Image: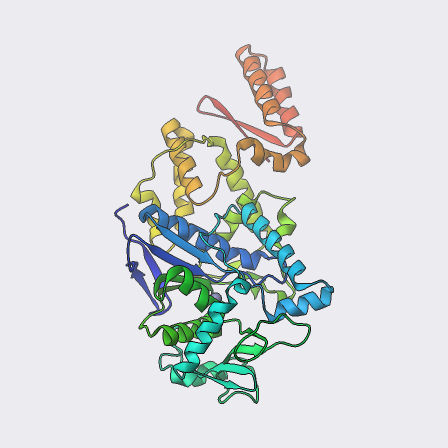
Length: 449
Ligand SMILES: [Zn+2]
C-alpha cells in the first residue's frame, strides 16, 4: 500500500503523517487491563480501536509488534481479592480468562505479546536502581520515588505546566515524599500483600513502572506508537515518559501517542466508580460480538461515544442487512476504500464506504460481493458464517436458514405457476417466524425483522 498513514499525535496535538523509526519493524504498545474485575464496554473501546490500528499497520508494513500488557499486581486487585476472600492469583487468573473470552467475542486479534507485570519485577527493580544511580529517584523509608522536577519535559504530553497538573488532580499525599508531585516506583508490602525481594526491602512496584519495563523489553528504548484511553495521559503516560527517558537517556520514548475518548451513558463517563458499567460478558448470550464491534467503531475514536439500545439496534439491523450479500471469498481492497482508515483511523468514514459497497454488491455481481466481504473482514466483521449469525436470532424465531431458503424456493415456484395465494401464504408463514422477504431485481432477499 503506497498510501501514508496519518494519526493524531497527542505529543504534538497535531494530526501527523506516521513515519516509523524502522519500517521493517513497527512497534506499538497499548496499556492493557488491570485484572481485578471483568471488563466493561468502556474497556472494550481501546481493545477494538487498537486492534483496527494493528490491522491498518499490518496492511502497510511487513512486521508489526503489538504489545498489550496485563496489570496483575495493583491496589485495586488486592482490595478486590480481600473483598471476595479469594487469593490474588485465583482472582487474576479468572479475570484474565474472562478478558480473553471477551476479546474473542469482539473478534480482536491476539497482540504479538501480552506480558504480565508480575513476570517482569526483576526488570523493574533494575530500572529503579538505575534511576537512583542517575539521581532521578530517591529512597525514603523503604519507598522509592521519582523526583518529577528533575525531568524538565514533564507535562509535555498533557501540554500543561506541572503546577496545573498537580492542581487539577488528586496527588497522593505522603510524608515520605520530597515534593507532592513525586510518584512512587517501589513501596513496601503489608503482610497479606504480594511482595518481592528488593534492595529496599520486601515490596512491590508502583503501577506506572511496569509499562516502561515491558515496552523496553519488547520494543526497545524508543518505539513508534503508544496507545490507551485519554484518562491515562496524566499521570500514567506522563510518568512512563519521565521514567523511560531518564533511565534510557533518550530524547524520545514513543513517537506517536494515540488516545481514545470515553464511552458515555446519558453523557456520563462509563466507569466502575460511576456505577454505570455494562460488562462485555453480559452481551455474550444476547447478541453477536459483531454488533458490539460495529457499535464501538461507529464514532471516531477521538469523540465520546454515547451507548444506548438504539445504537445496538441500528448496528444489529445494519449487519443483518449486510448478510444479504455475504459471499465469503477474498476480493480486492483499493486504496480508495481504505482511505478513511489511513486517515487517523476514521471508522465512521470507513463504515460509510461499507454502505456504498453494500449497495453496489446488492445490484452487482460476485466480484462486488467479494469486495464487500473483504472490506467488512478488514475491520473484523463477517467473522461468523451466515448460519452462525442467524443462530443468534434462532432462539427468537425458531427457523433455520435452510428452511427459509426452502420456503423462498417454494414461493418462487408458486409464483411461476401463478399460484399467488400459495405465494402469499408462504410469505405470511415466514413473516410469522419474523422473516421479511423482498423481491428485488428478479431475486428474493430476506432478513429478520
Ligand atoms: Zn501503561
